[in-house]
Image (cartoon, rainbow, N blue to C red; front, side, top):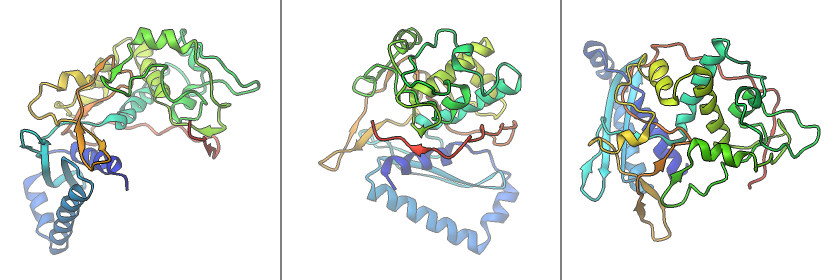
Amino acid sequence: MRSSTVLRSLAITAVLLMTASPTRAQSVTDHPRVVEALNVVELWLSAQRDYHRLPGVSAGVVYDQDLIWSEGFGYADRESQTPATPSTMYSICSISKLFTSVGVMQLRDMGKFRLDDEVGSVLPWFELVQSHAGSAPVTVEGILTHSAGIPRESDYPYWTDPFDFPTHDQVVQRVTSQETLYPAWKYFQYSNLGLTLAGEIVSQTSGQSFGEYIRGHILDPLGMRSTTPEIGDAWDNPNMATGYSATRRDGERKKVKPFSGHRSSYGLCLHGGRPGAIRLVAAPPARERWKRAPRC
């Protein structure tokens, strides 16, 4: 498993948790098999951190909606040796796409649009060039399932230092000069641009900013009060973990500067919460099994 995948999976395990009922949690954690399993979890996580040279990891185990174990390993900030704890906040990067998608599906359920609507009918400024004759249109379902054939990114170099993400106006300006890579529904092509458009759909059809909608309809109902959809709000929080790069050739990880900009990828920082407080809508059905697109 890649170290980035390990870190993300452990971070999200740590953050979508509720406060446990002490009596119930105690009875579960006293069971000999649970005690043994949690010892294995702790040893495995510690080993994974060492093996992948992860600066820090926070994790938790939930049983039937009760938090029965949580722990931090390593450092939230390696330079100051600030320890990682169960309360450490993390940027969850593309796991944010799940929250964006839930927002889209909630608004679909409200009758604001259909999944088979063309994105251009929901976002009037969306005029990406269709370069494949006979292709199906770019639809809301297509961008949610990464199968619309659109480019991976908005046409800006924001994945390099200083990680300055494009504004709404910049995305709108550049999208008219971009074109589809493949016919819709032919390939699975992971697309940050697609989920950026999904976030814009949330804002456009709800009449609220993306952050206001996600807070009011997902985070607040779940009791996730230490979670923010505006990542810039979290940098000054003392519980916020410092970001580090992938492992370099010398085996080390470089400290990454906090990124700025519009957060066009709609990232979140979170920890804590109360699962199950709202109904999560089903994901849009896959129309067919499609091939993985060639790397581009």
